[in-house]
Image: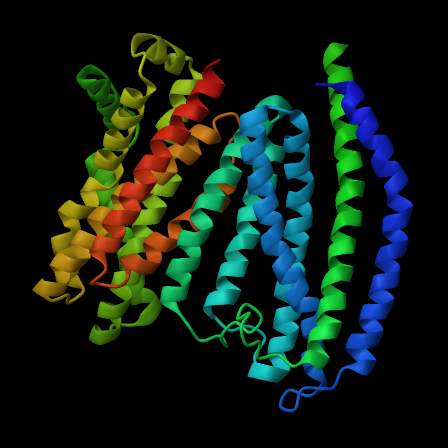
Amino acid sequence: MNLRLTNKQINIIEKANPFLIVSTIVAFTFGLYFSLLQSPPDYIQGDSMRIMYIHVPSAWFALMAYTILAGSSVLWFITRNPIFSIIARSIAQIGMIFTLISLVTGSIWGKPTWGVWWVWDARLTSMLLLFFLYLAYIFLWKSITNKDLASKISAALAIVGFVNIPIIKFSVDWWNTLHQPATISKLSSPSIDISMMIPLFIMTLATFLFLVTVFFIRLRIEILDNKILRIREVK
Amino acid sequence: MLALLKRDLYLALYSSSSFFYTSSFFVLVLIILPFLFGTNNVQLQVLFKGIIWIGLSLSILLTMERIFNADYEDGNLDIIIQRYPSLETIIISKYITHWLVYCLPLFIILPILSFLFYVSLDNFFLIFLNLFFGSLGMVFIVTFVSALTLGAKRTIFLKAIIVIPLFVPFLIFGTNLESWPILLALSMMSFVLSIYVSAYGLRLYVE
């Protein structure tokens, strides 16, 4: 464990934190103003559609967080630098919360749109499975008392989970395709109107800033935790 | 390799789970079916395809602590690893043992079970193929999860949380009768994944 390196990292994080918090609040103020007041309501779904501005970014970042989790686990395997294991651990909890947010908001959105709280369709089900992949990662880390071993083992599990995500996604898609087709991913001709695109973009930015803020706070906690662990081991 | 396999099989069959127990377990899981859903022939035939997979996953999942944990806790695993330098040999022996003890009984009583649940002969062969390839893949998955969770406290629920999302593709394709080639592909993929990850996990714990 290179303590000097992490001290420097803690300093950077501590300095960056107030700026991040302020910019998150500003971005959310703008984003909520545009998404709740400025953007037009959907002509079929009405105002209930506005929950999309929370739902879609959190779903994106839930997926992105797992990519970061797997990526830092791979980097940990290559470099054996403990900072990657710490990054993986801090992003896992945030990713789990984002998955939960997207599931809950999706369910609230589903009630006026589909008439039921939950529909067993491909995307919802694979998000639910993603939630359990996060849960497995976090629980596995917590249940192994030797923390050096725990980080090695949970890194392996993260990579296995990442390999399995496309397989799970493919099989769940095959099992059921009820959901409306993806709207944003079609880059050539987006089927979402520009007046909704702008608030969605601002809200995505705000959610991203929120993620980074929380991530840095968690990172700092995990680094300090790691230090305490080392000091205890030396004693 | 053969001596190791013989030892594993003897231990598994002598300790607690004879052939008879495992096959009774499958019969009992399926007996629940008419009690829960009534005796409508057509309905039972549909439900049978699903419940048989629940029985198989339960039998693999509930017994996964026997793959490495017993050997690990009494120290035998260290001795075995010293005796057989290639970890892959040990892992393959564990695959074979686990499949023979906890999955094979299902295939032996499957003809009787499908007779009880009015499954036609064509469907029986397809269900058999599906279960065969699916059970191989599920044993591979359970083995590497068991190798990874050796040091965790003895919590079958933690293992279930890890394993069931990985089982989902098998269960989805397993209930479709024509998709045994996909199950074969999935099993081969999980074999490749499993043998590396189990070796990695074992090496970590034994060091």
